[in-house]
Image 1 (cartoon, one colour):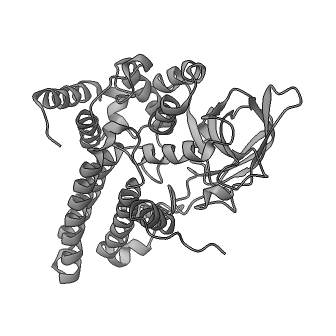
Image 2 (cartoon, rainbow, N blue to C red):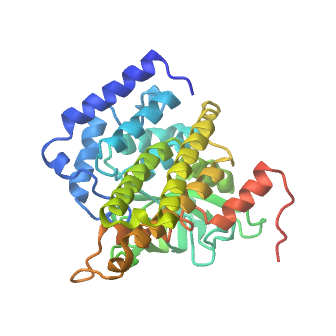
Length: 392
């Protein structure tokens, strides 16, 4: 990825703006809201996101006609990297801005774009993702949640259960994959619906995690309703839309994520030096391998980003998900081994330290966003062209 003078100027602009604006309560929220800590300073982080929006720093990659800046891939990379280096608060609007927004731009009707894109851009409506179900986690095509038209045809009526729904307890809307034609093959009878969360037919139950926080939720739909026009990409065309959303999820923001990973690794290295664990040859070898592995993640991500000009990332994005999830899970293991026996002890009221929290939350890295097994199947079948896995 070759950087132009304009790209470098853009990076400097981002860096200077963050330095000038991360002050007061925003400075106090630096670094807050990460995995297992999503509850931290939530109201301040919403205000921060809206502050970003007011100054044109949300939805950078969106076309200008939809309120974005039509930023190049290099500029998007620069923004995410500088944002992570500045330790700015973790964003609360990621799901709307980086998943649903690009999906609507690619597949939505003009009416849908006018209705929903401004609220995403200005962070006045928050979104969650209704994909996984108790019997359809990694096998998304097996969803059982149904959506049928009302008698007068003006609405969709939803019934079913979603699970592992990030931030559902805080969201205003949910994009839901539901079965609209049960008589069709399972990949072909799905639709992608936009559903309001604030209605009697929607119940959200937080899931208590190992970190004693509740980012994930169960969501129950009982005759929940949404307008007939709120189907994206056409009735029974939800599979291709859902797959595109997953591609956007594994896009440019992974570069910023990796800057965060580098900060975590540097912290583990500092801990190893402080407590003497670095003198153990096995620990030193693992620290070295972790550093090299992170460089490989970055190079792979940059290589993948160069093809984004043609639209959503393709199935190759599964390589990045598989790689970073395993790397981060292994970092959690390494952090605990560097801590040693002290890592087995919590503080009062289950008070977790930074590295204990990292280890506990990273258990989920290889599951959420598509499990390792599914990513391998995608790479084998859709990237390498190998025969499909036999289905029982």
